[in-house]
Amino acid sequence: MSKTVSVKICGLRTAEDVAVTAASGAAYCGFNFFARSPRSVSLDDARGLALEAPPGLAKVALTVDADDAFLDDLVAKVPLDMLQLHGRETPARVVAVKARYGLPVMKAVGVADASDLVTMEPYLTVADQILVDAKPPKNSVLPGGNGLPFDWRLIAGRRWPIPWMLAGGLTAQNVAQAIAMTGANQVDLASAVESAPGVKDPDLIRAFMQAVHA
Ligand SMILES: O=C(O)c1ccccc1NCC(=O)[C@H](O)[C@H](O)COP(=O)(O)O
Image (cartoon, rainbow, N blue to C red; front, side, top):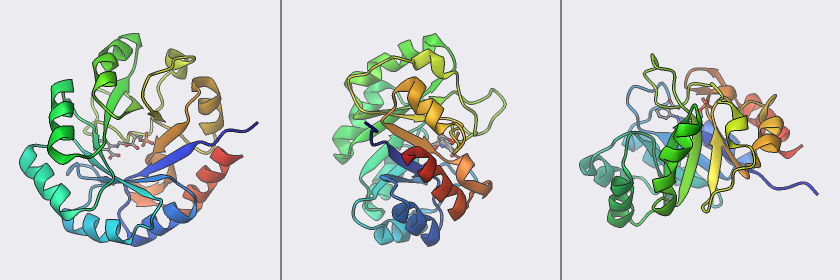
């Protein structure tokens, strides 16, 4: 029996991105507020995009080590379903963000070797979800969204007590193998559905979704 895998497409910047993501059957869309990313959007633009998102498409805001002043503004302006913390936020910071905003929090953890799975453990009791992502290369300015996979054998057969998403270099060509190896029920991607950094390609989004559901 085939299983249902939920998809999050991250780094949406235009109304067409949102429309295609929703129509393709993705469960989540991500708005990126890391200023140095080619995928970043302003609060005003994100508000417009979020208001256009149809019911059923969960709106996730990705931030990196954001302070309360920024998050206050973000949550006041943009209707959201989840906060994604993609920096060096501690477990205590996850607890504080959850309490302050009352939104589910997904904590991203970069994986390069088995020690990163130990680093993940304290988050499993405080976050609502974990994003199991590739650790960025040392010279990258982006803490995520580098289009590079990690060694999926590191998490093959691993089960965690809270929902989690697999991310890092997923493509239409490798996602079936990634799901089979890791048992992921949710996947997240940015780079492989772009024709250029920050520019989503509707055909690539549709091809990825077909590969997930094949
Ligand atoms: O995508 C970015 O530019 C980015 C910048 C800063 C922090 C995180 C970022 N992306 C996080 C995501 O949720 C990506 O979807 C995830 O890392 C996978 O990206 P990719 O390997 O490009 O599919």
